[in-house]
Amino acid sequence: MIEVTGLKKKFKLTKDHKKNKLEKVDPREDKDYFHSVRDVSFQCAKGEVLGLLGPNGAGKTTTLRMISTALKPDEGTIYIAGEDIVKKPLFGRKSIGFLSGSTGLYGRLTVKENIEYFAKLHGMNKAAIKTRCDELFDLLDMHSFIDKRAENLSTGMKQKANIARAVVHQPAVVVLDEPTTGLDIMTTQTVIEFIKGLKAQGTPVIFSTHHLDEVALLCDRVAVINEGISCFDGTVEEFKQAGNSEELNQAFMNILTEKHNV
Ligand SMILES: Nc1ncnc2c1ncn2[C@@H]1O[C@H](COP(=O)(O)OP(=O)(O)OP(=O)(O)O)[C@@H](O)[C@H]1O
Image (cartoon, rainbow, N blue to C red; front, side, top):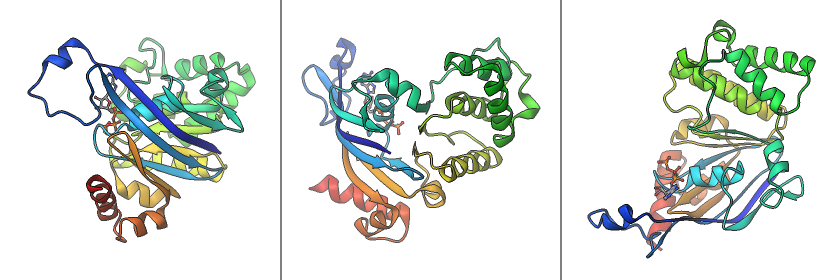
């Protein structure tokens, strides 16, 4: 179970940003700061998949980076197994597997060497690494490229390798920032099946997406962020009710518009 409550994060504005007066002013911008995330809360229990939705710039990546402990929130709590990982970031790093657009692999190492290296960093022994790598290479259909250098991978291969890297230590919670962006249909399907597998094992999965068809396929819960503020957190059925539509795209737009006009 992961429970996120009242997260806030602001960034100091640079001089260059402040000078650019032609840009449309975002309500989150004040004199010196951009309040990227203003009040975000949601929860995801054992065996649930939560889809994190919001327009471009809503604050999804900033929120997920706080959950991954890469960014420290200004306010708020993130509880996993009864521990606030804002106060215990080391526990957070062990408990969470995080995939982001900026997750990196070492270009000169092969895929296998990369995954083994990150497994070692997590303190796994040789036997455990072999078993886990074989399992991940099967699940993510990676065998054909595990001996290729990471710098020579296609977008899809790289994404699969990054996912394997993120979950090699069997984290208690998996957090994926737009895991299917830029992937072809086959690779997307492999990633979707992989998320279903995590769910079947009871691992809570949080993923951000702009694809509501993925929400229909995978999610038990939905959280919506707009301009840094949570405007929905509930089950997919509650999402349809709140958005007054059985069609997820329409429900999403209705939720955004309604909350936007309040
Ligand atoms: N380090 C930073 N300094 C200043 N502003 C930032 C910083 N990081 C993020 N922001 C701003 O915070 C807002 C939220 O960004 P974020 O990347 O979290 O949005 P998002 O919901 O993930 O968007 P997208 O769907 O386009 O990926 C954006 O306006 C972004 O420009």
